[in-house]
Image (cartoon, rainbow, N blue to C red):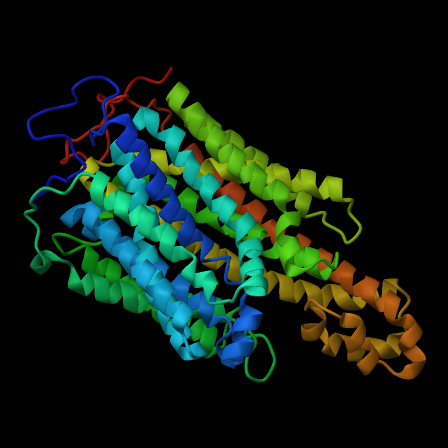
Length: 563
């Protein structure tokens, strides 16, 4: 298989001009301009996963489309997840600059059209278009940063992406709520346009252009793209449906065709995709990279830690809304220690890796902290003091943060520069897939745990036995947020209304115990992620980037000896 040089490689015939040299030569002013533009576009694409949430109730009311409520978010996540590895391959073949610009343009076009949507069907379609562009931004942006800096320097800057990710979760609900209340929900999407155009202008004028390529569209792995897309769509929809209610009002089971059937279909098609990828010359997901020990161990760890991260980020705001009674917007700020820990440790770990050139023991140490935080949260109760809960969340965030930057650095140091795009996009894809699988498992554990704990907690709060069957049948409604007291007043007989406070306390305790149960998933995922991380070789990063395309990983003779 011929290997083409990437526009982010060093000039032909040259090695690095000196220690500390990067593959993409830019002066400091241009480098920081590109960094700013990349971080801005990454922030916008990440923000669009959270900013829509607080605007959705108003959007659904105006567009009269409650049946497509979740698809406004799901459509964006589906299209951005599926296209990530495809963009990664295209960026390696045709250059990172043109593919990133194409992605930003599609993202901005989807943003403008989403703001103009006249009905929910249009909005879902335009959000999918927006996701098609977003799928290019994060993996290609990280690959460009990997080429602007030497392996030893990358940690300082890759950690910023973890901070941007955490920041989007903090400010997203606030921005979405404020814009919806004070301007119009349409501007939730329009706000991307001026900021995105500034970033696009910088990328177009400052980032060096790609040289001539030997690749062509005829060489693309079209069968692989088709099978990959055809397999991921039913798989992700099946995982998403696991957390939804069926038309009959019950939660889909794993054996339901809308869940298990779609997941099975997706896995079969993905099996055919892997078979096809093993036989083509230029696959969109090069399987040969997985022969590298550090590469495959990092990918496994990222998938598992993705399961751990997204579960906490999604379920803790729900805990605060249902148990502590705060608003949806406020709940995003009650998990500030988790996000502060994630952002701070992501940046700090990048700095430590850059200064020391080592990463294995830092990663293992952070996963140990994550394990302690997850185990602490398995003891969550409705009455746990805020300061204690915040300490647990801080431990969880500090444990998760280094994985945002650390594994990116490891993967980028394990592959030649002309494969940075596909390697980085595969890592991003596996992190998102880990989150999808983790959320499906967490939702299943939560639902079964709530059904098990509710009658126990009702009895502990001295609710008479004759009332228990009726309350258990309301389990689906009682898991929601809002005025549950009104639901109980409409359901319980008049003679039982004095028991409403006791019933509400029992519901809150059952809810808290059920959320605590999902952190066993986080704990197990962290332990398995730690096992995968332990397989990494304890090597130091080099100051000079490697551009020898034929190598799969640095050989033992090329790497520095462990201290």
